[in-house]
Image 1 (cartoon, rainbow, N blue to C red):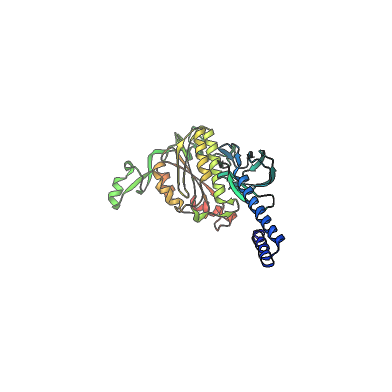
Image 2 (image 1 turned 60 degrees about the horizontal axis):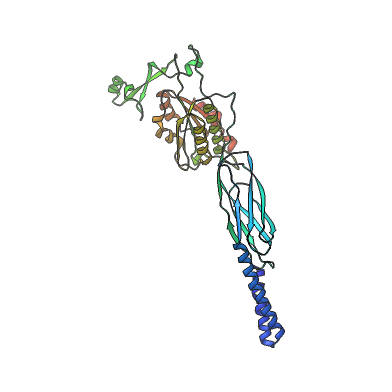
Length: 377
Protein backbone atom coordinates (compact mmCIF):
# COMPACT_ATOMS: atom_id res chain seq x y z
CA UNK A 1 0.00 0.00 0.00
CA UNK A 2 2.88 2.35 0.85
CA UNK A 3 4.48 1.64 -2.52
CA UNK A 4 1.25 2.56 -4.32
CA UNK A 5 1.10 5.87 -2.52
CA UNK A 6 4.69 6.61 -3.56
CA UNK A 7 3.87 5.70 -7.18
CA UNK A 8 1.11 8.34 -7.14
CA UNK A 9 2.81 11.03 -5.03
CA UNK A 10 6.32 11.13 -6.56
CA UNK A 11 5.21 11.92 -10.15
CA UNK A 12 2.72 14.53 -8.92
CA UNK A 13 5.38 16.16 -6.73
CA UNK A 14 7.79 16.18 -9.68
CA UNK A 15 5.14 17.82 -11.89
CA UNK A 16 4.39 20.44 -9.22
CA UNK A 17 8.08 21.37 -8.88
CA UNK A 18 8.51 21.49 -12.66
CA UNK A 19 5.55 23.87 -13.09
CA UNK A 20 6.44 25.98 -10.09
CA UNK A 21 10.13 26.42 -10.94
CA UNK A 22 9.96 26.13 -14.69
CA UNK A 23 12.55 23.34 -14.68
CA UNK A 24 12.55 21.56 -18.05
CA UNK A 25 14.58 18.66 -16.66
CA UNK A 26 11.97 17.96 -13.97
CA UNK A 27 9.21 18.09 -16.54
CA UNK A 28 11.05 15.54 -18.69
CA UNK A 29 11.54 13.38 -15.60
CA UNK A 30 7.80 13.54 -14.96
CA UNK A 31 7.02 12.42 -18.53
CA UNK A 32 9.52 9.56 -18.16
CA UNK A 33 7.85 8.45 -14.90
CA UNK A 34 4.42 8.45 -16.52
CA UNK A 35 5.66 6.37 -19.46
CA UNK A 36 7.32 3.85 -17.09
CA UNK A 37 4.21 3.54 -14.92
CA UNK A 38 1.85 3.11 -17.87
CA UNK A 39 4.19 0.52 -19.39
CA UNK A 40 4.37 -1.37 -16.07
CA UNK A 41 0.61 -1.37 -15.77
CA UNK A 42 0.14 -2.66 -19.33
CA UNK A 43 2.88 -5.27 -18.75
CA UNK A 44 1.11 -6.67 -15.67
CA UNK A 45 -2.26 -6.98 -17.35
CA UNK A 46 -0.97 -8.37 -20.64
CA UNK A 47 1.31 -10.94 -19.01
CA UNK A 48 -1.38 -12.12 -16.57
CA UNK A 49 -3.98 -12.44 -19.34
CA UNK A 50 -1.68 -14.80 -21.28
CA UNK A 51 -1.35 -17.34 -18.45
CA UNK A 52 -2.96 -20.75 -18.26
CA UNK A 53 -3.05 -23.24 -15.37
CA UNK A 54 -4.02 -26.85 -14.81
CA UNK A 55 -4.57 -28.96 -11.69
CA UNK A 56 -3.85 -32.66 -12.27
CA UNK A 57 -6.45 -35.41 -12.00
CA UNK A 58 -7.34 -36.60 -8.49
CA UNK A 59 -9.04 -39.86 -7.51
CA UNK A 60 -12.58 -39.22 -6.21
CA UNK A 61 -12.10 -41.16 -2.94
CA UNK A 62 -9.29 -41.29 -0.39
CA UNK A 63 -9.06 -42.44 3.23
CA UNK A 64 -8.09 -40.66 6.42
CA UNK A 65 -4.39 -41.15 7.08
CA UNK A 66 -3.46 -41.59 3.41
CA UNK A 67 -1.55 -39.15 1.22
CA UNK A 68 -1.22 -38.47 -2.49
CA UNK A 69 0.56 -36.19 -4.92
CA UNK A 70 -1.05 -33.80 -7.37
CA UNK A 71 0.64 -32.05 -10.27
CA UNK A 72 0.22 -28.34 -10.99
CA UNK A 73 1.14 -26.71 -14.31
CA UNK A 74 1.41 -23.01 -15.16
CA UNK A 75 2.10 -21.90 -18.74
CA UNK A 76 2.54 -18.56 -20.49
CA UNK A 77 1.90 -17.49 -24.08
CA UNK A 78 3.30 -13.99 -23.43
CA UNK A 79 6.10 -13.04 -25.84
CA UNK A 80 8.19 -11.51 -23.08
CA UNK A 81 9.54 -13.26 -19.96
CA UNK A 82 7.69 -12.88 -16.69
CA UNK A 83 10.32 -12.15 -14.02
CA UNK A 84 8.27 -13.08 -10.97
CA UNK A 85 5.17 -15.16 -10.28
CA UNK A 86 3.73 -16.08 -6.91
CA UNK A 87 1.33 -19.05 -6.98
CA UNK A 88 -0.94 -20.10 -4.11
CA UNK A 89 -3.04 -23.27 -4.28
CA UNK A 90 -6.60 -22.54 -3.14
CA UNK A 91 -7.85 -25.42 -1.00
CA UNK A 92 -9.97 -26.16 2.06
CA UNK A 93 -7.96 -29.23 3.12
CA UNK A 94 -7.04 -28.99 6.84
CA UNK A 95 -3.35 -28.27 7.52
CA UNK A 96 -2.55 -27.87 3.84
CA UNK A 97 -1.15 -24.69 2.34
CA UNK A 98 1.16 -24.34 -0.63
CA UNK A 99 2.72 -21.20 -2.08
CA UNK A 100 5.59 -21.09 -4.54
CA UNK A 101 7.38 -18.36 -6.49
CA UNK A 102 9.31 -18.59 -9.76
CA UNK A 103 9.81 -16.89 -13.12
CA UNK A 104 8.71 -17.95 -16.60
CA UNK A 105 10.60 -17.47 -19.86
CA UNK A 106 8.89 -16.23 -22.99
CA UNK A 107 6.20 -18.76 -23.92
CA UNK A 108 7.42 -21.15 -21.22
CA UNK A 109 5.73 -23.36 -18.64
CA UNK A 110 6.47 -24.77 -15.22
CA UNK A 111 5.18 -27.93 -13.50
CA UNK A 112 5.59 -28.98 -9.89
CA UNK A 113 4.07 -31.56 -7.57
CA UNK A 114 2.49 -31.07 -4.18
CA UNK A 115 2.10 -33.81 -1.58
CA UNK A 116 -1.10 -33.77 0.46
CA UNK A 117 -1.67 -35.70 3.67
CA UNK A 118 -5.28 -36.29 4.68
CA UNK A 119 -6.06 -36.07 8.38
CA UNK A 120 -9.82 -35.41 8.48
CA UNK A 121 -12.80 -36.91 6.70
CA UNK A 122 -15.04 -34.77 4.52
CA UNK A 123 -15.39 -33.38 1.03
CA UNK A 124 -12.62 -31.03 -0.11
CA UNK A 125 -11.25 -29.30 -3.18
CA UNK A 126 -7.83 -28.43 -4.60
CA UNK A 127 -7.61 -25.46 -6.93
CA UNK A 128 -7.96 -23.14 -8.61
CA UNK A 129 -4.50 -21.51 -8.56
CA UNK A 130 -4.22 -17.93 -7.32
CA UNK A 131 -1.46 -16.43 -9.47
CA UNK A 132 0.04 -13.07 -8.53
CA UNK A 133 1.80 -11.41 -11.47
CA UNK A 134 3.75 -8.18 -11.21
CA UNK A 135 5.66 -5.89 -13.54
CA UNK A 136 9.49 -5.80 -13.33
CA UNK A 137 9.32 -2.94 -10.82
CA UNK A 138 6.63 -4.51 -8.64
CA UNK A 139 4.36 -1.47 -8.91
CA UNK A 140 1.13 -3.07 -10.19
CA UNK A 141 0.59 -6.67 -9.04
CA UNK A 142 -2.39 -8.50 -10.55
CA UNK A 143 -4.00 -11.62 -9.02
CA UNK A 144 -5.86 -14.07 -11.23
CA UNK A 145 -7.69 -17.34 -10.50
CA UNK A 146 -6.61 -19.95 -13.01
CA UNK A 147 -7.45 -23.60 -13.52
CA UNK A 148 -10.40 -25.70 -12.38
CA UNK A 149 -10.98 -26.98 -8.86
CA UNK A 150 -10.73 -30.74 -8.29
CA UNK A 151 -13.15 -32.21 -5.74
CA UNK A 152 -12.72 -35.43 -3.79
CA UNK A 153 -14.03 -37.15 -0.66
CA UNK A 154 -11.93 -38.33 2.28
CA UNK A 155 -13.56 -41.43 3.77
CA UNK A 156 -13.28 -42.16 7.50
CA UNK A 157 -10.84 -44.74 8.79
CA UNK A 158 -12.35 -48.24 8.82
CA UNK A 159 -10.25 -50.35 11.17
CA UNK A 160 -10.01 -54.12 11.21
CA UNK A 161 -11.83 -55.77 14.13
CA UNK A 162 -10.74 -59.43 14.00
CA UNK A 163 -11.54 -60.25 17.66
CA UNK A 164 -14.66 -58.14 18.12
CA UNK A 165 -18.17 -59.38 17.44
CA UNK A 166 -21.31 -57.49 18.39
CA UNK A 167 -23.55 -60.04 16.69
CA UNK A 168 -24.04 -63.38 18.47
CA UNK A 169 -23.15 -66.28 16.24
CA UNK A 170 -25.69 -68.91 15.37
CA UNK A 171 -25.22 -71.88 17.70
CA UNK A 172 -27.09 -75.12 18.35
CA UNK A 173 -28.52 -75.96 21.75
CA UNK A 174 -29.95 -73.93 24.60
CA UNK A 175 -26.93 -72.47 26.38
CA UNK A 176 -26.94 -68.90 27.70
CA UNK A 177 -25.17 -67.50 24.63
CA UNK A 178 -27.80 -69.15 22.45
CA UNK A 179 -30.55 -67.64 24.60
CA UNK A 180 -29.12 -64.14 24.18
CA UNK A 181 -28.88 -64.67 20.44
CA UNK A 182 -32.47 -65.70 19.97
CA UNK A 183 -35.41 -64.07 18.28
CA UNK A 184 -38.97 -64.06 19.61
CA UNK A 185 -40.28 -67.42 20.77
CA UNK A 186 -43.83 -68.73 20.96
CA UNK A 187 -44.31 -68.12 24.70
CA UNK A 188 -45.42 -64.74 26.05
CA UNK A 189 -43.84 -64.02 29.44
CA UNK A 190 -45.01 -60.47 30.22
CA UNK A 191 -47.07 -57.57 28.93
CA UNK A 192 -46.40 -53.87 28.45
CA UNK A 193 -48.20 -50.78 27.18
CA UNK A 194 -48.72 -50.52 23.42
CA UNK A 195 -46.16 -48.37 21.55
CA UNK A 196 -46.25 -47.03 18.01
CA UNK A 197 -44.99 -49.68 15.60
CA UNK A 198 -46.13 -52.71 17.63
CA UNK A 199 -47.95 -55.39 15.66
CA UNK A 200 -51.69 -55.60 16.33
CA UNK A 201 -51.31 -59.37 16.52
CA UNK A 202 -49.43 -58.94 19.81
CA UNK A 203 -52.21 -57.09 21.61
CA UNK A 204 -53.28 -58.94 24.77
CA UNK A 205 -57.02 -58.31 24.55
CA UNK A 206 -57.93 -59.71 27.95
CA UNK A 207 -55.53 -57.38 29.79
CA UNK A 208 -56.47 -54.49 27.49
CA UNK A 209 -60.14 -54.88 28.46
CA UNK A 210 -59.19 -55.07 32.13
CA UNK A 211 -56.98 -51.92 32.30
CA UNK A 212 -58.77 -49.86 29.66
CA UNK A 213 -55.77 -49.22 27.39
CA UNK A 214 -53.89 -51.16 24.74
CA UNK A 215 -51.41 -53.68 26.13
CA UNK A 216 -49.14 -55.95 24.07
CA UNK A 217 -47.43 -59.26 24.85
CA UNK A 218 -43.66 -59.60 25.13
CA UNK A 219 -42.17 -62.94 24.19
CA UNK A 220 -39.23 -64.87 25.53
CA UNK A 221 -36.45 -65.37 23.00
CA UNK A 222 -36.67 -68.43 20.80
CA UNK A 223 -33.98 -70.77 22.07
CA UNK A 224 -33.93 -72.96 19.01
CA UNK A 225 -33.28 -70.64 16.10
CA UNK A 226 -31.77 -67.25 15.33
CA UNK A 227 -31.45 -65.78 11.85
CA UNK A 228 -29.55 -62.49 11.74
CA UNK A 229 -30.86 -60.49 8.80
CA UNK A 230 -29.42 -57.01 9.08
CA UNK A 231 -27.37 -54.63 11.18
CA UNK A 232 -28.47 -51.03 11.73
CA UNK A 233 -25.76 -48.54 12.73
CA UNK A 234 -27.21 -45.60 14.68
CA UNK A 235 -24.53 -43.06 15.76
CA UNK A 236 -25.66 -40.22 18.00
CA UNK A 237 -25.12 -37.01 16.00
CA UNK A 238 -27.08 -34.61 18.20
CA UNK A 239 -24.99 -31.51 18.84
CA UNK A 240 -26.20 -31.32 22.46
CA UNK A 241 -24.09 -34.33 23.40
CA UNK A 242 -21.06 -33.65 21.20
CA UNK A 243 -17.93 -33.59 23.38
CA UNK A 244 -14.21 -33.06 22.85
CA UNK A 245 -12.15 -30.89 20.52
CA UNK A 246 -9.26 -30.83 18.04
CA UNK A 247 -10.04 -34.14 16.37
CA UNK A 248 -10.55 -35.98 19.68
CA UNK A 249 -14.33 -35.74 19.74
CA UNK A 250 -17.18 -38.13 20.32
CA UNK A 251 -18.29 -37.33 16.76
CA UNK A 252 -15.01 -38.55 15.23
CA UNK A 253 -14.86 -41.67 17.40
CA UNK A 254 -18.48 -42.58 16.66
CA UNK A 255 -17.88 -42.20 12.91
CA UNK A 256 -14.74 -44.37 13.05
CA UNK A 257 -16.56 -47.07 15.03
CA UNK A 258 -19.51 -47.06 12.62
CA UNK A 259 -17.20 -47.26 9.59
CA UNK A 260 -15.24 -50.13 11.14
CA UNK A 261 -18.39 -52.10 11.96
CA UNK A 262 -19.79 -51.51 8.48
CA UNK A 263 -16.58 -52.79 6.93
CA UNK A 264 -16.39 -55.85 9.18
CA UNK A 265 -19.92 -57.11 8.62
CA UNK A 266 -20.24 -56.22 4.94
CA UNK A 267 -16.98 -58.10 4.37
CA UNK A 268 -18.70 -61.05 6.08
CA UNK A 269 -21.60 -60.81 3.66
CA UNK A 270 -24.09 -59.18 6.05
CA UNK A 271 -26.62 -56.49 5.24
CA UNK A 272 -25.79 -53.20 6.96
CA UNK A 273 -27.75 -49.95 7.14
CA UNK A 274 -27.02 -46.47 8.51
CA UNK A 275 -29.48 -44.22 10.34
CA UNK A 276 -28.18 -40.86 11.61
CA UNK A 277 -29.74 -37.48 12.38
CA UNK A 278 -26.92 -35.04 11.73
CA UNK A 279 -27.12 -31.68 10.01
CA UNK A 280 -29.66 -33.55 7.84
CA UNK A 281 -31.13 -37.05 8.02
CA UNK A 282 -28.83 -39.79 6.70
CA UNK A 283 -30.80 -42.94 5.84
CA UNK A 284 -28.91 -45.70 4.05
CA UNK A 285 -31.07 -48.81 3.79
CA UNK A 286 -29.58 -52.14 4.79
CA UNK A 287 -27.88 -53.85 1.88
CA UNK A 288 -24.77 -55.95 1.24
CA UNK A 289 -21.78 -55.65 -1.09
CA UNK A 290 -18.72 -53.45 -1.51
CA UNK A 291 -20.54 -50.77 -3.47
CA UNK A 292 -22.97 -50.41 -0.59
CA UNK A 293 -20.01 -50.13 1.82
CA UNK A 294 -18.71 -47.23 -0.28
CA UNK A 295 -22.09 -45.50 -0.01
CA UNK A 296 -22.09 -45.88 3.78
CA UNK A 297 -18.51 -44.61 4.07
CA UNK A 298 -19.38 -41.68 1.79
CA UNK A 299 -22.30 -40.72 4.06
CA UNK A 300 -20.11 -41.10 7.16
CA UNK A 301 -17.48 -38.84 5.55
CA UNK A 302 -20.03 -36.03 5.25
CA UNK A 303 -21.90 -36.65 8.50
CA UNK A 304 -21.50 -33.99 11.22
CA UNK A 305 -22.78 -33.87 14.79
CA UNK A 306 -24.86 -30.76 14.12
CA UNK A 307 -28.25 -32.38 14.51
CA UNK A 308 -31.07 -31.14 16.71
CA UNK A 309 -32.95 -34.46 17.02
CA UNK A 310 -32.06 -36.40 20.21
CA UNK A 311 -31.03 -40.01 19.65
CA UNK A 312 -34.04 -41.30 21.63
CA UNK A 313 -36.49 -39.40 19.43
CA UNK A 314 -34.61 -40.50 16.30
CA UNK A 315 -34.88 -44.15 17.34
CA UNK A 316 -38.63 -43.74 17.83
CA UNK A 317 -38.96 -42.23 14.34
CA UNK A 318 -37.10 -45.20 12.82
CA UNK A 319 -38.76 -47.86 14.99
CA UNK A 320 -40.60 -49.52 12.09
CA UNK A 321 -37.26 -50.60 10.60
CA UNK A 322 -36.31 -52.70 13.64
CA UNK A 323 -37.82 -56.14 13.91
CA UNK A 324 -37.06 -59.80 14.39
CA UNK A 325 -33.68 -60.60 12.87
CA UNK A 326 -32.38 -57.04 13.21
CA UNK A 327 -29.39 -55.96 15.28
CA UNK A 328 -29.50 -52.30 16.33
CA UNK A 329 -26.05 -50.90 17.20
CA UNK A 330 -26.36 -47.51 18.93
CA UNK A 331 -23.09 -45.55 19.24
CA UNK A 332 -23.40 -42.71 21.73
CA UNK A 333 -21.67 -40.72 24.51
CA UNK A 334 -22.37 -41.94 28.03
CA UNK A 335 -23.86 -38.56 29.01
CA UNK A 336 -26.98 -39.44 27.02
CA UNK A 337 -29.52 -41.77 28.68
CA UNK A 338 -32.64 -41.08 26.61
CA UNK A 339 -32.59 -44.35 24.68
CA UNK A 340 -34.02 -46.78 27.23
CA UNK A 341 -37.69 -46.62 26.21
CA UNK A 342 -37.28 -46.76 22.40
CA UNK A 343 -34.72 -49.57 22.68
CA UNK A 344 -37.01 -51.57 24.99
CA UNK A 345 -39.72 -51.21 22.38
CA UNK A 346 -37.36 -52.38 19.62
CA UNK A 347 -36.30 -55.31 21.78
CA UNK A 348 -39.96 -56.19 22.34
CA UNK A 349 -40.37 -56.48 18.57
CA UNK A 350 -37.55 -59.04 18.41
CA UNK A 351 -34.51 -56.85 17.68
CA UNK A 352 -31.11 -57.48 19.29
CA UNK A 353 -29.80 -54.32 20.97
CA UNK A 354 -26.11 -53.42 21.19
CA UNK A 355 -24.91 -50.13 22.66
CA UNK A 356 -21.37 -48.85 22.14
CA UNK A 357 -20.76 -46.27 24.85
CA UNK A 358 -18.17 -43.52 24.46
CA UNK A 359 -16.86 -42.61 27.91
CA UNK A 360 -17.99 -38.99 28.28
CA UNK A 361 -15.53 -38.32 31.12
CA UNK A 362 -12.57 -38.81 28.78
CA UNK A 363 -14.02 -36.15 26.45
CA UNK A 364 -14.76 -33.62 29.18
CA UNK A 365 -18.30 -34.80 29.96
CA UNK A 366 -19.97 -35.55 33.29
CA UNK A 367 -21.18 -39.16 33.21
CA UNK A 368 -18.84 -42.18 33.23
CA UNK A 369 -19.59 -45.02 30.83
CA UNK A 370 -19.76 -47.58 33.67
CA UNK A 371 -22.54 -45.68 35.45
CA UNK A 372 -24.58 -45.29 32.25
CA UNK A 373 -24.03 -48.94 31.36
CA UNK A 374 -25.49 -50.08 34.70
CA UNK A 375 -28.61 -47.98 34.11
CA UNK A 376 -29.04 -49.31 30.58
CA UNK A 377 -28.67 -52.93 31.65
